[in-house]
Image (cartoon, rainbow, N blue to C red; front, side):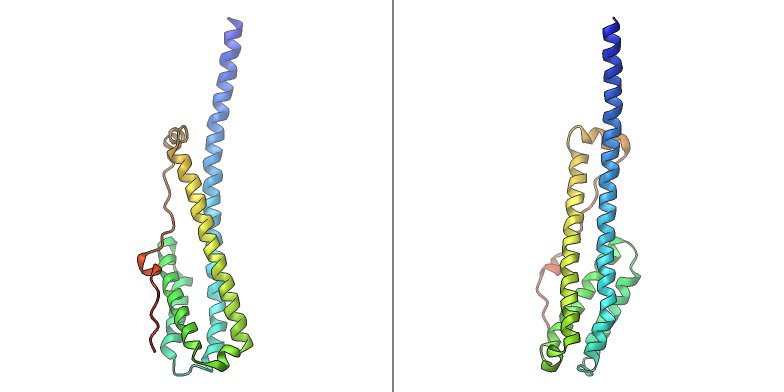
Length: 184
């Protein structure tokens, strides 16, 4: 009888640890997702901060390409002012498209392509694009881990108990997957 009492006590303690353990896993994974989204925002801000310098380097060479310069400036403003993931993703698409146009137009200006400021800014933007891609991948990997915990047994029981729901991945639209046609 005393042995049964101690077994029940030990099982009760283990059960409490399991509940705490799963709760902590959900918290840690949620924090990882929030952090990875914040890292994406940091890189988007870094890119937005580089844009004015790029525009200044390009302005002198491409005076008659005002529409392209305006598109980049407007897209940057939209990205900086975006609230929430959906708006940031949309503004980011616009900025990527405008930057591709600027770099394609720059191909027609040999002096600009040789300008050290322009080349350095182009390298910085390329590096930032790589970091954004990595941050997106890390975000989606974190979502995968979280969603797996929410869907697999016994995590699904604890997810329901704690009110945890699956989270959405960052999606790439079909339009983003297509090559952009640059016309002069």
